[in-house]
Length: 106
View 1 (cartoon, rainbow, N blue to C red):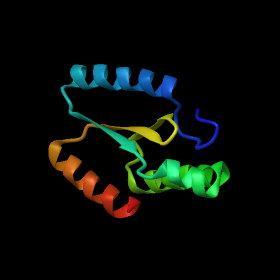
View 2: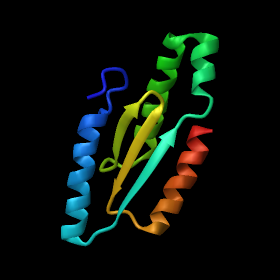
View 3: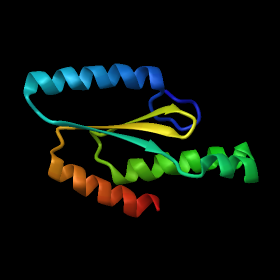
View 4: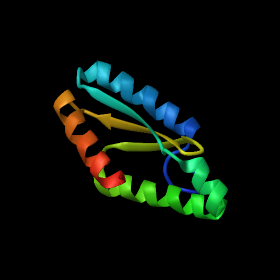
């Protein structure tokens, strides 16, 4: 677990990704992956300090948790980068997820 945000860390996230891909193949169910990189995060840290940057990261994770389904997986890959895993998600659902994230994170 990532100590700052409370979501999965990179190492465990990659293990979960491997498991989810194998499960997807076995069950023939789709899986959707997204990579989230916070635009302008370095400027936040440089301007307001790392403490404020940490608050932004925590807020982003809370927003993701409130926007995504319970089965969706959030992994902090490092810095301001996140891997999002959406098990059993179709391309149509991908479009809906993208719209929700764009609305909630902008």
